Length: 253
Image 1: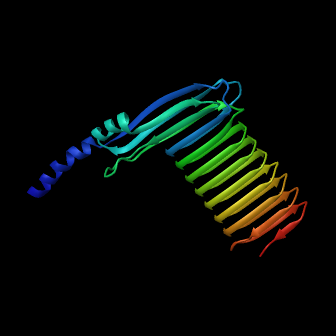
Image 2 (image 1 turned 90 degrees about the vertical axis):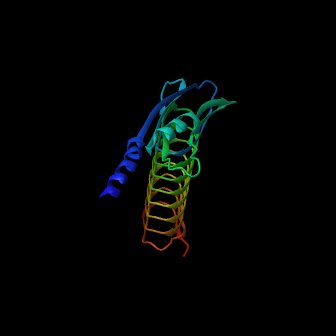
Image 3 (image 1 turned 120 degrees about the horizontal axis):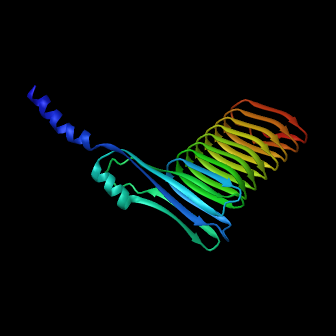
């Protein structure tokens, strides 16, 4: 009984010091003369939306850490957060990351909500967490380790290189290229050519104005309503269904 009482008194200070940390920071940069927004971020959700008529890039960064004691929270806020929005020639550079020291139990992330002028190219290098991109008139490039990706209403070329996580793309006026490790891919309404190189996960492609080229390791492939050609370089190990193709269908076994 005595040992249990001692254990309780030892654990109580640890429990008292463990708490959730929340902080919100706002960043803003005039967009005059800027053509590109380059985002480099670590763990956390990312939301990016083009806004008609705005003259600046506005970022709301929500920093959170769970189960961190007060001293670690203080160090996190003062020394470990890398959050910056700056201009470099004709591009804006946004970085949002938390540097986790070795031998610590800090679990921290930065959620980014970005608003920018619609007429801007966007480049994103992301660590982990979901991503939602909407309403961009410009080219979109994404390199992502893990997490779901959704993109909608993009006028320009879209290029995605993803490690894992579902991908959903719709309403693209331009071409689309995806290199994916794992996760389901759903594509709807793309005016240009679509190229997919996928290791595993189901693929569904609908309403394409150009040609569709697919290489797949495993998972089902469903392709419907394509105005030009369909070329299946590697059908993989899943079921294959192709319908409504106005051009030529080529399947390389």
